[in-house]
Structures are given as C-alpha cells and as structure tokens.
Image (tube, rainbow, N blue to C red; front, side):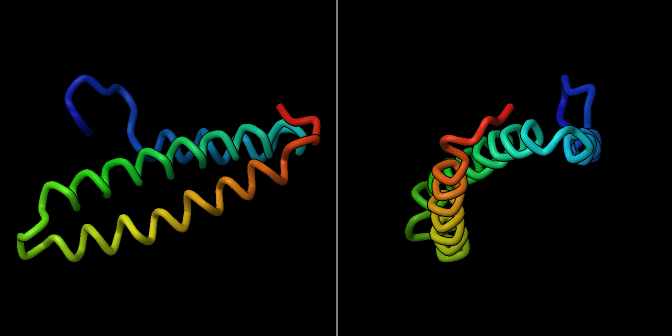
Length: 89
C-alpha cells in the first residue's frame, strides 16, 4: 500500500464485486466506467514507461505491454459504444 492510502487493491476489488449485485442497468454502466478508467490509466503508465526506457534493456517489455493495453483501450471503446442508448447508471 502506498503512503497516504487507507484502502488496498483488495478493497477496490471487493467494491467492484459489490457492483455486480446492483440492478444490471446500473451495474453495467458503473463497471464500464471503472474498466475504462483503469485501462486508460494503465495505457498512460505503460506508454510513458516505454518512452522513458527506449534504448534500455527492458524497453521491449514495456512497449509490449503498451501495445497490449492499446488493444484494451479499443475494446473498452467498443463496450462504451454498445452501452450507448441503454439506460445505464
């Protein structure tokens, strides 16, 4: 746990699992927003580290992660598009 945090990843995971028990119309919107935020932020971190490490031995690992996460960004965009028009949360 990082300094200043009074929660853990396990706490967040538990809260996400609680969302599943909400009505589906609410749950899908909330889960999609959380997934979007997580994947976009993961992409920012991975892309930034890949750029920072270019030319270093571990650059390839970070570049590979950034590329994989970019696919996730595209997938979450498709999910958000599928939710358009639905009455969600």
